[in-house]
Length: 261
Length: 260
Picture 1: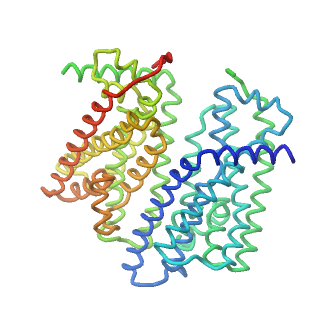
Picture 2: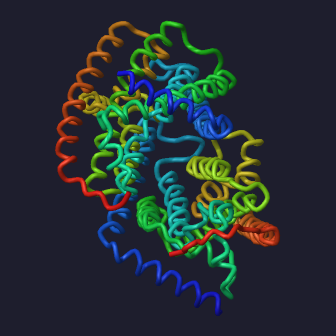
Picture 3: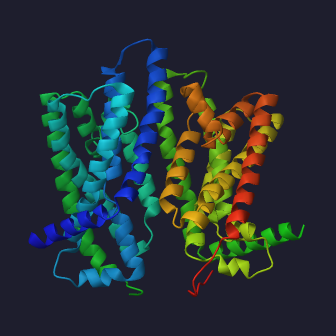
């Protein structure tokens, strides 16, 4: 455990060395929120109502802020594994006395933590200016708890995609498509509440809503029943994906070919 | 004429290089098309609920995506270094291009090709056809809009990345500029207030690669044509001047660089 904490700490320190770079990158959350404020402000005016499917304009903006923070803070594990396979560094990591997957978990968490903190700070500032004060403390609490499960789900998916690099080396295309599925089916760009009923029913049996919709929706509308339901669904999918990841890792180890180093 | 022949020779070499890894090239194209299609699902869901936003319908959004994706794809496929020019400058990799009797900027930009760009082009054309604006004059206006878009994408990023001659590494800055330009270009300017619209026509010319060409295809107006062509010309002149002016300050170390 100690060694994984050391990896996490090392990555946080690495990121702290370039605060300007980090702040610069958080401009994208401001651009995203600004565009969506324009879109939803117009939509609410045209619809002539203060609430659409139970969500007000302020709810919508804080929802989007939380969803975008999760997206920007999700691990980029597949890119790192892919790079390590291409440059041969993977041979060095595999020979060390730590578990390859857990190494990437700690590395990704160290990296993601910093991005989440910076983006949430910039996001709060921009959203407060665009839509008024943030939701209640209960919302923050439920969102933070479900963000843990959401981050683990993202990690499992990114690691699964990353392990494909053991076979195909380049995994960016897979990540792009996965990202778009989370954007749409995960409810990042549009809350599930606004989906047609038939699609809501399909989407709710997939893991995507638990990665994005769960924390963002609970953040703006903290309901205890929904919280328990989301938590159960989230950890069910964590279980499924962890098993899949363990199996995939075993299989990948056998087919890995290292070209350089 | 000599430069055009040179460009075609570069493009031919890039294509031959890509075809060496045929499966990877095709995969990039197909995946980019799926990626764009998946992203566009948002608009299907949005318009399923709201039908129309300030005069923009699902068909209009298809047109907007068609133009922006084709313009981006052509720029990425034929002038692939336009997103990484800053790194070439900061890492002293211009030495190779300077030693050859060819126009430096053109040579750098066209010496790289992003295979995924072809996926954007195919998606963009498909999206334009499906938008319902396909007619002879509509097609001509679409081509004009795309050409202006290509010119603005490349020129804007060349301007930002030419700052590397003065500032050194501009990777983070160019990423921000690129992300802002691309993101804003995929939404109609009608969503924003006048001040933002002005910014999107000048400082971050996203409206000139998205909204303005889309409005031009929807119905011909001299004002759209003027905005597009003047914008493309001004940004092109600025990009070339800035690159040339920066090039006079260029210096590099003695690192051995290999350009493939």
